[in-house]
Length: 294
Image 1 (cartoon, rainbow, N blue to C red):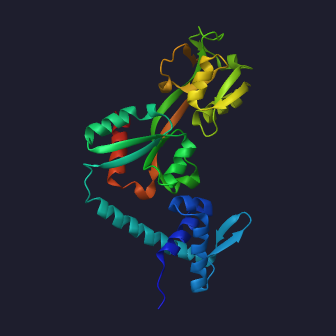
Image 2: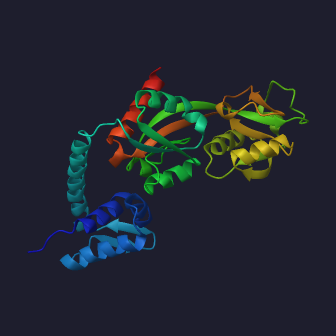
């Protein structure tokens, strides 16, 4: 009698679901060679072929599609069992690790959650949105607050709710020609020396999208983190951008509103779908929803 190896099925299911060995590796937190080997063992043991491998990636065979339907049911039942066990746990103590692309996003949320659940230890990890998504797949964090919407592919693995909208403003250092302005028009930035955020920053993506749309060309001289950008602006190296709640009344730096257009980033609270029913994570999401409704 042949028995089913659930590690092999889990590897197959992750690859079938994500259509990528790389993403499956992150989802399961195991190496790509291990994923590949598990599927090979599955195919060899049963003398079957469930995945077609080609230069552009992988596709499922007809048998693979049927197997994926079965594994979907299996792991859905597993998730229900986990939820059943979790429902019997209390949330009076424990640790929750949260990643955020800006601590300003979650100060109110942390305060409210701690008031409701004083026995829970909250650990905060600061990263940009792309890094937070990687950390979720690596199980380095339990949930995250990111500044960008999820792609269609990621939505299959991740649970998310919109959290906060934040306005983008211009920041300039003392001595900059705009320093005494209360507001300016986007076109005033034409040709200006500009200090941009690093790749992966949603503030950068949203602002560049508007610049392209309005055909405003800036002279990007640096691409850096928010902390480095603030320092460079203070030294009057160029003009920067920041989400308004991030502005911390920096000495010799002034924020300036953009008067002819409102540019916003949208923050989202996100976790792995398989973990959204975890008592601590569920409680954190419920606290966030109550803040949104307020």
